[in-house]
Image (cartoon, rainbow, N blue to C red; front, side, top):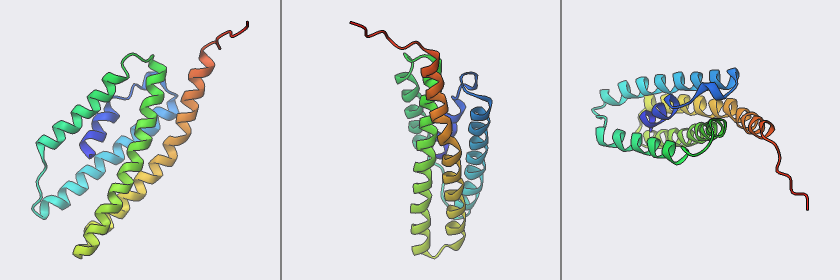
Length: 151
């Protein structure tokens, strides 16, 4: 999931969002990179290996989501991407909850600690990203004229 999240964050087009929203997305990307690095080191020390097939499939899902939104205008795509990143942060937070619970049953306190730390980072990122969804959607609506429904 982490590699797919990084791919999705790379697709963000900062030209169609406010500076603050772009900065929040870039900050979230840095958080994700650090999580990949720290979790990979820990899991590799336990003998786990990355799965290139799974990473490839995750990247395909990211591309498919981009293709589905290809007919939308740039401003709408920026809003859709912010929604995706918010959902990704929430999903990853829940994933880290599950990892922590499993590691706790196995008695691995280091993975529990790291998973809880990453969980907090994800939910904090979601809180930061959420207001930009509304801001982006409101910008899109204000930029367009309302249709005239006069009879």
